[in-house]
Length: 179
Image (cartoon, rainbow, N blue to C red; front, side, top):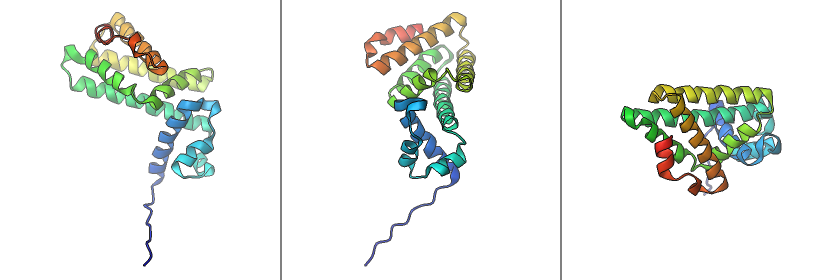
């Protein structure tokens, strides 16, 4: 009696999504220049030529990972705002962001995106997406410039505190009230 294992064939879109997920994990640790594409394709079980048929360059794959991370933040902010009363939206969005920071790969990927901003193409994407999130928070909360500055400053402090393993740098009541 022989056992036959049937593999489900993935669509190109499913493999593309898997590559982006693997890219987030690998680029989070090694950055754009310190990550071999083979480490990403190895996670997914595809060849490098196949990856390059979906993403023309390693930088294109890095940018897709950056875009995905910003998408996740936007989605979390929208969901938090939709589930909260208007006066509680900033608080709910702060909670949602704190939850996102629990995923170390996504947290470190944000830092890698900022670190790669010496490249003009990467800087343009990061600037566009950061500005888009800034405007989204303004729209969802009605916050003024001072409140937005506080919210984003606290968010960046949360990023650094989470990255270095010092959550005590941001007492919960401070980021809830200040951002």
